Image (tube, each protein chain N blue to C red):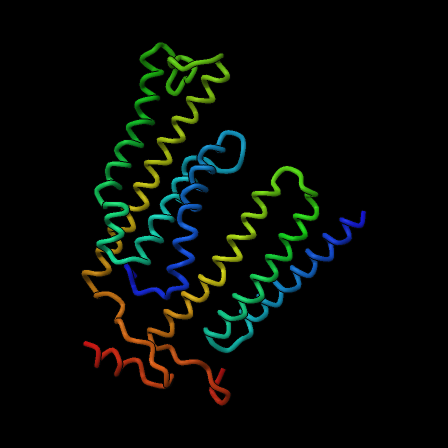
Length: 170
Length: 102
């Protein structure tokens, strides 16, 4: 499952698509005010980009692209941003998540716009980190309990029995 | 008017191919042929539906987004089915032969 020798087709298409998946995640999160989407959906889409990279390249490379500790930090920063803005507006004299109390530029409508954008960004980071963290946990459990997928070369004959191939490769 | 007719023809053709893909997924005997039905029929059907929607939009808002969605599904859908079939092959799943039971 993790870095399992994908074909060059899968590798090439993934390399082409992953940056656009990340961009689409941020697009969905930024349009959460007035369109379908929001921080949660955008975070999940951004996490999909990381998970695709985890699945197509070896573990060492994908951990250089997105270290496992970064997932934890993203969760902390995301939740901190959300709770920080909520409590800041509370302490500045408004209600919880009352954006127009915040020291943001513009009239109250624009202040709410930017406040919601900041909170959605926090949700994006938190959800992205949590999704990648869950994937890493599941991948660790899977690779430590059963071992990874048996790597057998593609045989050209086509009628060799799978069990004997797996035994021979061990 | 003529644009609506073209859009309707494209979307109906696309829905026809999607229906063929669904029938193939339900009726084909083994994993590989089902994957093949999904990959080919759904890619073409989806592209036709998107082409019909693009004709409907007439270059208005959302054209670029729709074109990008069409491009990426055209790239990703066959790749995903290729990866699925390849994993099955590597794990040693044997294809269905003519005399096997369904």
